Image 1 (cartoon, each protein chain N blue to C red):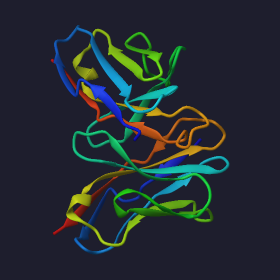
Image 2 (image 1 turned 90 degrees about the horizontal axis):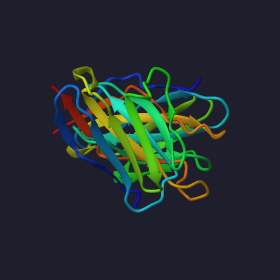
Image 3 (image 1 turned 180 degrees about the vertical axis):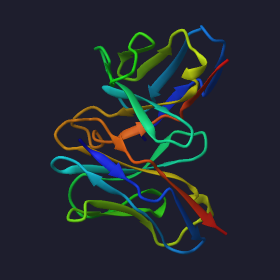
Length: 114
Length: 119
């Protein structure tokens, strides 16, 4: 069975500082990994994905994530946080065998402090 | 690109009535759509996978007769909550993925969600 762990329920970062939101996963075979962001009372917005290729993936709004196979991690990063980055972030995984189901982590609430 | 809409965005209904929620892919064709439910401060729970022109596949514990899913075209899927009760109150979110073989076929794009309150 596939699973995702987001070990931090809440992350607080000062505006302008770099931010990291952690994610580790477990899946059979090669993973397809995704980050989504959710603003209050809204659906999920796609940020970025890793399917294959370069381990460093760049996405929307200046976010990037690094796929680390040995550590089974896919941490989300941004060099300089904005107050508008404050939201709920979800990491998700699926396998590459054709199982379309996404398994989500429990989410990390990111708060950027002005 | 890859925009998914949902209608309505919120609905309040009386216990015992049925509510239909629409999910549309606006700028791409979606052979597969997914329906999720999200409880406050919790992650998303997959309810069912909907494939165009065929019956939906429901997750364990989801009542097929209560949550009717129809995926009649490549751009529209509907979720009908039949005989709704207060415990069905929740945030329902759909997602859609592009047809297999397209550049973003692995990615699910989500709608803005529908908040259902059953009185």
